[in-house]
Length: 234
Image 1 (spheres, rainbow, N blue to C red):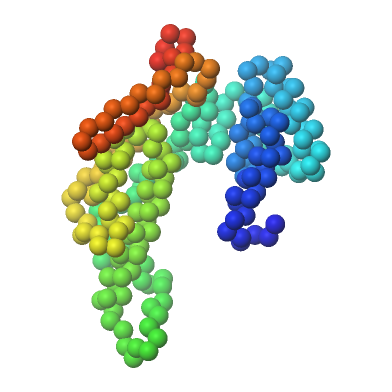
Image 2: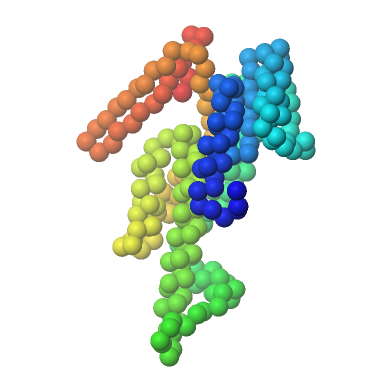
């Protein structure tokens, strides 16, 4: 399959899930990252043998330097898995903490423009520098904010009241977005405060599942709980 096709990732993922379907109850497959898990060492050896049989049957090549076997703790797709719990790796939260809390300053805009070439619109004999600066200001802010919100969405299970906190920030991505103000700055500060540290969550097991819901005129919420060994986990 050639690189660059829009549908390539989804087709690759579908194929990988089909290939490893016989062991999917004990495997997490995301594109070319595969995580195998077992309840005991003996069961894990059997799983590895079955995995290698599938790999050999389909001619799949494995990377020796990226492979680890028999680990009780492991990092997978930005998450740290250990002791039946998972939480984001520290560098994920650190990237969000670096996000600017205020709107971009003129100096930041000038620094960006110094690395870009202003392209004159077709059919126009001149251009308006202040308008270009304003346009770049909006573009840079949107790009940075959208990247930040995508990371927040990845961590949404660890952040309480996330929808309420991100609402004023999501408004800034709309066409008729308001000017950056204290509401947006406060939202980013509150998000950063919740990132230190992020609590670990329990990996779903074989316990009793409880789907707890609540709602009001403005908001609704749902939490998946699990009763296991006389303890209730989120």
